[in-house]
Image 1 (cartoon, rainbow, N blue to C red):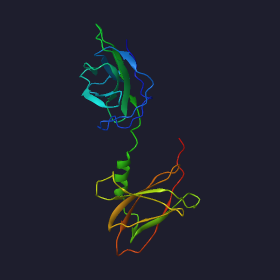
Image 2 (image 1 turned 90 degrees about the vertical axis):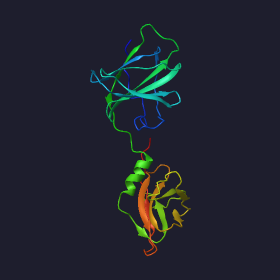
Image 3 (image 1 turned 45 degrees about the vertical axis):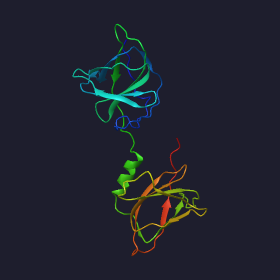
Image 4 (image 1 turned 180 degrees about the vertical axis):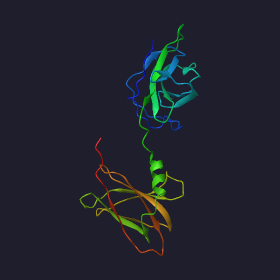
Length: 232
């Protein structure tokens, strides 16, 4: 039995980024014997050398391999359970097939077709966004880090989150975190240097900006406006 794999039921977070974790939402897993055969197709044409990665029910990557010169692949013996196979032949041509692997071998193993579809690339990660803003020109030169967060109408925003990252430190896991007060104001003592700040509040778009602290600079406050975010 041949089954066409659907790609629309997957949230692509890290499947092809080389990480050990992937987040997926799937509709169903097809029943399969051990050692199923896979045909990797695009537009009905077999895709030699397509990339394949197998994830278990806990979204842990178990193995990766490539289709053969005919665009075919055979899964090795796996413990019985649910698995998802991510296939790709380019950053935007990909698909997911989920199988419920039985503990028995069949005289004629199941054969499944995975039709690669054009999907938009995954959105940039937070780290990628931070790296991008750090490459931009410094937005503000000031003697101290302080400012006010406002909404599009100009009203102050209390309890907004402000995270500060030292440029070039390479540490995105331990930012300096502060919260705006009831007047939407924030401040922190920072050593001279270049920084990136990330300002967030529920229901509003996240702002990324850069600034430099210099003892010779004029004291200028940051005035940050957060636009209303899209409602999911």
